[in-house]
Length: 354
Image (cartoon, rainbow, N blue to C red; front, side, top):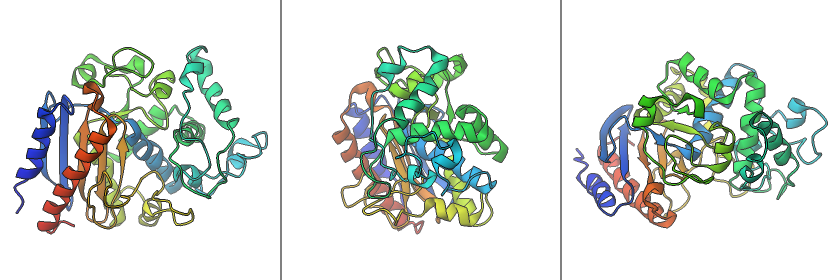
């Protein structure tokens, strides 16, 4: 049996060297939490800015839900949804291609510098127009390039398909399934209790302290709710959707087994892709996922958050930190993640949980 001593030592060392002021880890094996610790100023219920974990846990699973309800086919094109007035290069793009980062969109633009000058009610329409009119950088399914733009657009599309703001659509999804899950924090809905529970995340991209407000500038300009960033959550809340995916793969969860398998399958239609619909897979020996076993999916968040999960075994590692509060650079964070995850996978393997 693992005593997790080395995992804890790595966490403690990271805290001592000021990698973050708040650190939390939760390790699962066969559907049971085997180890959990919160260090520094963190508590087990501390809420973190999850950054890009929003992509799988909001857009990815909302797309799964809509597919399960026969409200969308992942092969549907933007033209079929939004009509023939779209720029010609955007018409044939599919929801699947956007989910797998293979649609051709640029990685990132600082749209918030333009959005901030516009009245708030006009910003979503302006963002949609800017993304649709931004030329694709490569042809659909030619390659996979991680793109915030694609998921910003996907968030707007999902709002149209659900006839709901994205924060409400995601909340309704998880509440209807009885899943404890991450949530959006629109600026006008931050209670004193949530504010007190939330780890700070340094300085906002748009300026000022990131206190219970999304760090990402583009999501911030939309009031904290976007397809690429904006979710907040605790260790337990990140675990909820992952456990639901695992139970669905076993045929006893909230989503159909076949569609869940399809969502989590690696994109083989795109050369060199490591992506599934919404999720990433470990890439090579130096991956931030560590020396992960086969079948693992996950995602990283810019703020210092991550999860890596083996859905068929309901085993994995959730690591939440607020690295931006101490200014820890990405390379230091990557090295820490790699070492910590490698150690945790070894312990899980020794216990027969993989």
